[in-house]
Image (cartoon, rainbow, N blue to C red; front, side):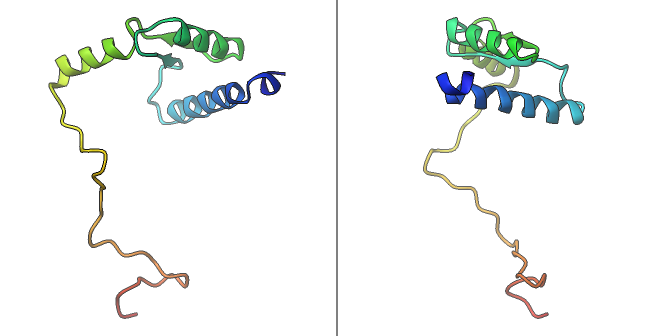
Length: 107
C-alpha cells in the first residue's frame, strides 16, 4: 500500500534495511539507523517512525545536521571540501581488456 501512496517511501525503507545489513555484516553498526534533517525536526522524526514501523531500529539526531556538523568540526577541526567542479582522477591504473589483459601494455 505504501508504494501506491509514496513510491519513494518504499525505496527509503528498503535502502535503510540494505545499508543496515551491510553495516551489521561488517561489524560497523550497533544495529540502529540514525536519521537527521537540517535541525532535527519533524521530517527526521517521521522517517524514524516509518522505519520503526517496518522493524528497523531508528533514532533521530537531536539538533539535526547542524548539531552533527558542530560536533564534527569541534572533534576533527575544519575540513576543506573540494570545489563542486573538481574531479578525482586515478592515474597509472589500467583497465583490463575484455579478454583479461591489461590495456596499454604488451601482453
